[in-house]
Image 1 (cartoon, helix red, strand yellow):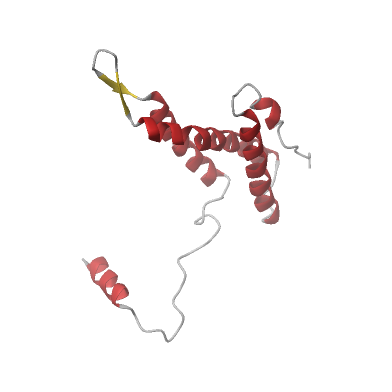
Image 2: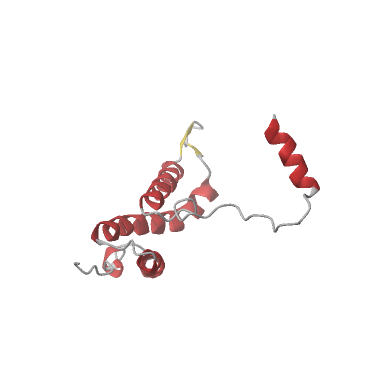
Length: 138
C-alpha cells in the first residue's frame, strides 16, 4: 500500500495572518483522525485525501466561526439596508461539508456502531424514562 504523508499545512496556511496557529490545529486534527482510522483498519490513500479536505475545512471553521458569530448573520450597509453576512453563510456551508466528510470517513458515532448506553439490568426506570416512554407512544 502506498504510504500517505501529512500535508504541509505550514505552507498551506502560510499566507494567513493566523497561519501558524491554523497549521498547528490542522496537524493535530490530522494526527487524531488518522490514528483513529488506522486503529480501525480503515486507513488508505482515498481516505487520506478525504481527511485532508476535511481538516482544511475544520481549520477554516474553527478560525472563522467566532468572527461570524460576533458579526451575526445580517450586516447593515452604509445606507441603512441589510445584507447577508457572507462569512456567516460560508461557516454554515463549512459545517455541512464537515458533517458529510465525517460520515464519508466513518467518523460519526453511528458509523462506529455506538448506540445509546443501555441501562444496567435491574435498575428501575426513572421519572424521566417514564415521561419519554409516554411521549414516544404518541
